[in-house]
Amino acid sequence: MAKGMVKKIRKGKRRGNTRRERELSALHEIIKSMQTLNLDEILHLILEGVTETIGFDRARLYLINETEKVLECRMAVGVEREKIQNISLPIDKENSIVARAVIEKKPFVISDALNDPRVNLELKKHFNLKSFAAVPLLGKDKVRGAVTADNLTTERRITAGKMASLVTFSHQAGLALENAKMYEELKSFSKQLEERVKAATEDLRRSQEQLIQSGKLAALGQLSAGIAHEIRNPLTSIKILIHSLINKLQEDEGNKKKDILVIESEIERMNQTIKRFLDFARPAEPTFSSLGINQVLEQTLPLVSHELREGNIRLYRKFSSELPEVLADRDQLRQVFLNLILNAVQAMPEGGSLTIATKVTSDRLKRAEKELVSGIQEATPEGDFIGISFTDTGCGIPPEKVSDIFDPFFTAREEGIGLGLSITHRIIDNHQGSIKVNSREGEGTTFTVIIPVKRQGSMKNAECKM
Image 1 (cartoon, helix red, strand yellow):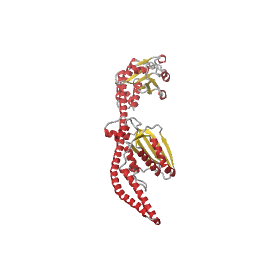
Image 2: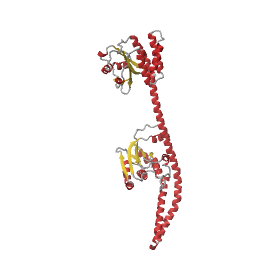
Image 3: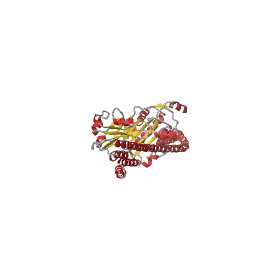
C-alpha cells in the first residue's frame, strides 16, 4: 500500500517547476498520506520517501525503546533484512553519532565514517558505511527515533540541498510517527480497558448469582426449619413410646422386640435426616480462630480413609508449605472438606484418583462483591486468599446441571437429600469466601474453595462479633 502511494506521488511531482519544488511537493504528499496509515506502513513510507523521493541509495530507521533505553533498528531500505536484526544502540552520545543526533535533536553528516570515532563500530561493519547522514525524528514533545541515509552504490556526495530535504521531511515524518504511536497506545489502552470491563462484568455476574443463591438458601432454610419441627415432634413421642414397649416385652417375645428395634433404627435415620434439614435451615454461627488449612485437611482425611480404600481411590496431596493462617471455624471447615471428599468418592463408583491441592491465590470475585457493596475500589495485593481444590477423575457433571448443584435438594443420586453442597456453600459464604466448580462430563470435576487469609486486626473484629 505504502509503496503504491510513493509511485503515484513520484508521477505527480514531475508537474512542478524546479527539481527542489517537485521534491518538496512530493514529500508533502507523502506526509499527507501518512495520516491514514498504521505504524508499520508509516515506517515503510518514511524510508521510501528518503530513497525514492529524496534520492538516497539506502536508509535505515531507528525507534527509541523507552524501557531498554536503546535505539532499535526497526526497518531499512537497500539493506538485507538479516543485517538489521538485533541492531540496538545505547542512547549514549559518546558511543554513537546516531544516538547523539537523538539526544541533541540535530542532524549530522559524516563524510568519513571509517575513521570517525563517533561512528559505532558495529554499524561500520554491518552496513559498510563510508559517508552518511543521521537525522532525528522529532515529534511535538520528544524525539521518537532517527533516520540514517547514505549513497553506498552511487557514491554521490550528500549535498546541502539533499540534507535540507531530509531534515524537513524527517521533522514532518516525526510528527506523523508520533500521532501513529499515540493512536496505537490509545488502541492498546482501549483493548486493556475492554478486557478489564469484561472481567469485571463476569465477576459481577458471578457475584449476582451468589447473592441469588444466598437468597434461595435463606427462603428454603425457613421452610425446612418449619417442616423439620413439624416432623420431629411426633417422632420424639414415637421414640419414647417404643423405648417403653421394649422394656415391657418379655423374653419369649423376642421376635416382636426385634421388629420394634428395626422401627427404632428407622426412626433414628429419620432423625438424622431432620438434623441435616435443621443444620441447613439454621447453621451454627461460626466460632472463628486462627488455624492452618493444611492441618485441618490432615485432620479430616483419616475420617474418610475407609471410603477411599473401599472405593479404590488413590489420594494425591499437593499442599503448599507456605500458606498463611486463616480465621475460620475448624469444625465447619472440616464439614466442608468432608462433604467435598465424599462427593468426589460418590462420583467415582469404579475407582479413580482424588487430588487435593492448596495454594495462595487471588480471588477477584469476592473483591468485586466487596467493592460493589462499599462503592470503594480497594488496591488489595495479589495472594490475599487461600485456594483449596478437590479434583476427581469421576463421571463429571452435565453442563446443563452445573448451575444447579448448590441448590438445596438437588441430587443426581437415588439416595441422599441433596443438602451437602448447599450446606457447604453456606458455610463458605459465612467465612467471606467462595466456592467454584469446573467440570467436564466423562472426565472429572474440580471444586475450589477460596478462603481469605488472616489479616492484622481480623481476630479482634471476629471476637467483637462473637
